[in-house]
Length: 146
Image 1 (cartoon, rainbow, N blue to C red):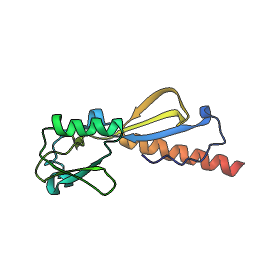
Image 2: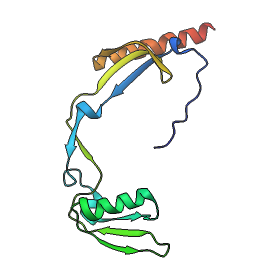
Image 3: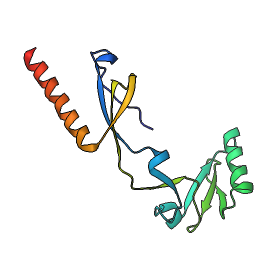
């Protein structure tokens, strides 16, 4: 995951107000199969390179050979890594999720990424838009006033 590049705010956390739209994995998605999400690994197969000279690589190779219940062939490349080649038509190792098509959660809270102050307020989508717009207007007015 790439690190987030943020501008460091000049105001304290307590002076910030955050508007957020979210679709949490736990409430808005369900586990899905490779076929459902049209997984490219399922459709075309894939390769996994494993460095068996490391403890992690030994554990990965053991899992693939003895516990994964997947079909594969294996070879070694020119630098000694093990290449496990998995043909198409079998589930990959990645977890997949399908949307439950639930409405997003619109919320507002005092604070920002540095910390949250108080409770999160959930809003209806239209109210969230209005509240956000009014907040932007208040900020613009404060900037104009100096």
